Amino acid sequence: MNVVTTLSPVGLKLTGEIDATNAHLVERALREHALDAGSLHVDLSELSFCDVAGIRALVSYAQPLDGDRKLVLHGMPAQIEKVMNVMGWAELPGLEFCACKLET
Image 1 (cartoon, one colour):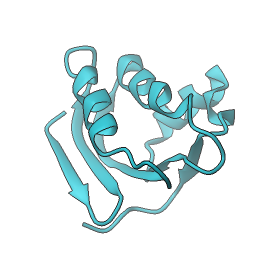
Image 2 (cartoon, rainbow, N blue to C red; image 1 turned 60 degrees about the vertical axis):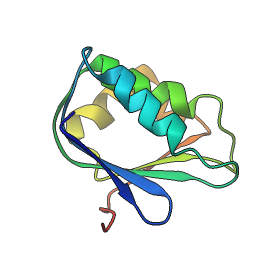
Image 3 (cartoon, rainbow, N blue to C red; image 1 turned 60 degrees about the horizontal axis):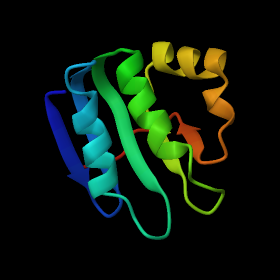
C-alpha cells in the first residue's frame, strides 16, 4: 500500500498495492479510523493490486459489524468484487459496495 489518505468526515482512500506484506497496515488503518457509531467509507478506486490477504483485511473489519455500522467500499476494482462474491463475503451485513468514488 503506497498511501492511506484520510477523507472527511469518515473515510479512507487506499492506493497502490495491498498484499501479505502490508495487509496488517490496512487492518490497523481501519481500526484507527473506526467510528463508535456509523459507517466507515473506504475508496479503493486507485488500488493497482490487492491479493487475498488484503481482501481478508477488509472482510475481517466488516465481519463483526451490523446493519447500523458498515464498511462501505467505494470504487472497488472488479477483481476484488469477484473474489468477495465467490467467497460469499459480499453478503456480510456489515459490508456494502458503492460504485462511486469518495472525494478527498
